[in-house]
Length: 245
Image (cartoon, rainbow, N blue to C red; front, side, top):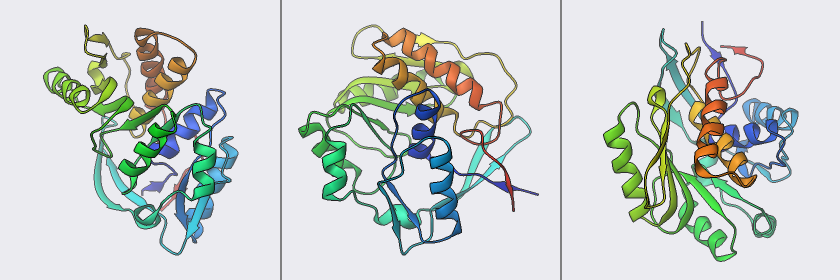
């Protein structure tokens, strides 16, 4: 029997940042349905500000994920639902323009809003594994799987596309980062994963928390690695009740 959990790139990052003690708000959309209400409730219980979550007349986005005996995940189906038509309002933008940092997950108009935030001098990061795009960005995250050569290719591609700093995760091989100079690397912690779902999102949150604290890239890689390792030890992107399907 399977189970369902609340999650998603930006949701997991927001929750993980809140768990690390950061003031964190989620800007996004859910459907006017039970999963949408469950999502807002989970965010609120985790300490994430939900004032700017839109409730739209669509189903709440969901993803069907299979987890194998080794804890590795495989995405089987995705329904983007309300997220597919989400766009921040002018009031949302006024708040976002005062943010210390904004992380962008997946939504169709992400490139436009990334540029608007950059024009407002707001530092922006984006997960290119869920939403590809070029143009100026402060931190680009991506995932290469357990492939160092591919990770270096993705790092070079992100920098060529306009990223000031690129961070590429490699699963059990750890992660690398670079800004055009020497590539920095960190090994993953040895562990037996229960579920790797959301580990990359937790890595992003851990890295951003350290980065916002003024730590250097190597220390930020370590913080991301440690956050990801913790997430691999429980189902889903953050601790929460399991709902049986």
